[in-house]
Length: 490
Image 1: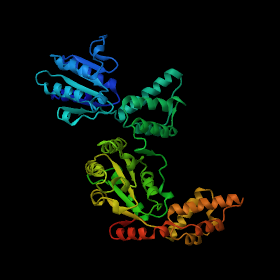
Image 2: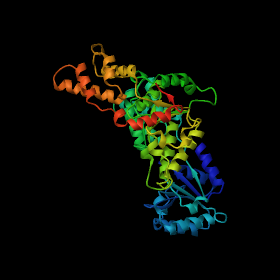
Image 3: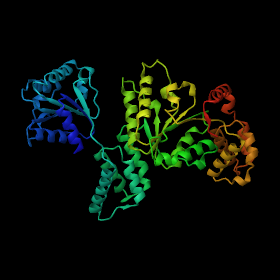
Image 4: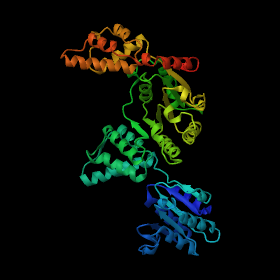
């Protein structure tokens, strides 16, 4: 009912052109038909296959002579009786088509005398600038939590009637499925709910990864925005004690806000392999929230305006998943300041800054960066983010803890190793380099058909040249920049 009223108000505001971007074409046509019948106006739909046909008259014949875009617009332009025309998938016919654009404009210019309303229904539609002032955009609403639960229950009942058995579902798994269907259209949510049920007659947490993969493919966000399934617990992150304390103090304020000052996000800067990405995952694990990873490099598109659109759609999807954690990995690669890209990076930055300032949904942003100096100053100032943390190389006790974590994870008895002594051998190593030393030591031990020993680990450590040596100058510069500007994460 809300969609019907909102679209009717737009039409009553006498916009000659209404753009409806949706994958639910039939639902959009139904709204247009109902509005036309309520107002007593003739309603037509058009496609390049069928041409024009009356939408509110059952069994009305197709007007095959209007299948070409300029033919249908010419007929509408010549019709003295105002009507509503829903033109489906019309977007290809306005690109580099001056005659089609001119016909659309002439219909719009005559709207006061012949009140035709053109409803352009497509999955995406970019209007030429000369038509933008005659148009309004309308977006169909998405089902809310209650409606999604109803959809899942309907599919479960349908399965039960067809198979003669009741769908097995725990309350927690059901709630998670419904939450992960947010952001989808009614029909897409129904398809994914049906898919989760049909293969085993149950709704379990094992269904969620495939549901989310299918969801992001449907939303065309696969590659730009991804759902991270392995959100590490803070037990898997060595060190970072100050960051952990900061997050513990703000957990309830984010999950149960009692005022306007809710935590908004952090920026983690440090050397590659230092644990920034793992820490970003661990925020979601600590707060028991879904984690979305936004690939800033994948946002960019060769077509003008599409990069900003990709980012807006990704941020809108993150809001539909709220409460959640949004991880912007290596953010400097997408927002590095400069004018060598026709201003695209500045426009993308503006889109992100506007969202950071105005968002109302509980989306906690965790941005990670290796090179802070490439980031624009507008992004790193307080108010945009809550805090800037510097993730330095781990100290000796933290290196011992990281060794214990990785040995434990690979089924090794850590009591058999002098972790403190091994930590001295890997002085200057990042967490990733320590992990790789353990992995390489296991390969060596397996090749010798022997159990892993300290000797294997020492050999791998002494033969490794860490980043702190190969990139000593860059690390020194990063430490100098962060001194006094960032809070130590450890």
